[in-house]
Length: 87
Image (cartoon, rainbow, N blue to C red; front, side):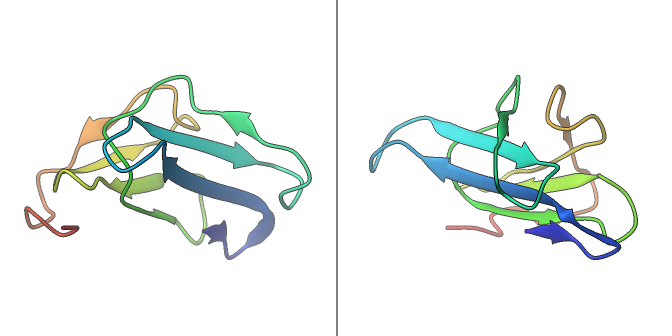
């Protein structure tokens, strides 16, 4: 996922193996290099980035949705998103 107003800010998430732990990272140079998130809210899933800020939304494979406003250093569980958005 990338930030619409700054396409150089790119975010990716993954999972190590079928039942492995989640991983995530961000790039400020269009994906040339990445910095790992310092914390992970859950395994795999889908990620989105705000169009006009660096807010990251992560819908984990476990069904919970979290957001970070500090490039993945901390995550807050969303109270406005439906549960089980990613199966």
